[in-house]
Image: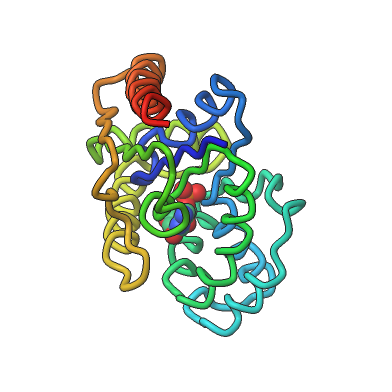
Length: 212
Ligand code: DC
């Protein structure tokens, strides 16, 4: 049973990479950001405040797999609220079991704390990052594609705010695990980033299997 943990910054390309790796290694994929986005959407739909820990925890306790396919989870406002609901420790605790259950059958999980908290014993850990301006450009193009009316400047400001919040929360902050392999996708196409990831994963898995 192979577990591949992929963490990284917002719009670093980790989601696309995780999807491609799950196909390549024939493993199921969980985008854990969707769990936080689903909590955020529920809170916003109920006209509650993402800063309200109690409301967010109650929402987190009512998340099901069926809610994760909602395209509305991809919107900018839901993403921003997801980063806010994610700072509450009881929200993270409520979503832990879902993620560990998924990982127990083997898979590719991507998020912010997979290698550090959710799957500290993952077979391979990757940490994906890229220059903020490039990430903002990628995200801006994506949002325009969804029909949102937003400037590149605003996307860059929101991205920096999100990076800061994700990396500085007291519980499970975004950071590479000590044994994570770093990939900077700033000047890499999706194919090149995928190639780099496969090279790392194959090498790590080969060493592991030689030991057993
Ligand atoms: O990866 P994403 O943009 O869909 O994630 C949305 C927010 O959810 C992100 O800003 C922080 C939070 N998140 C988290 O705290 N832990 C995870 N494993 C995944 C996402």
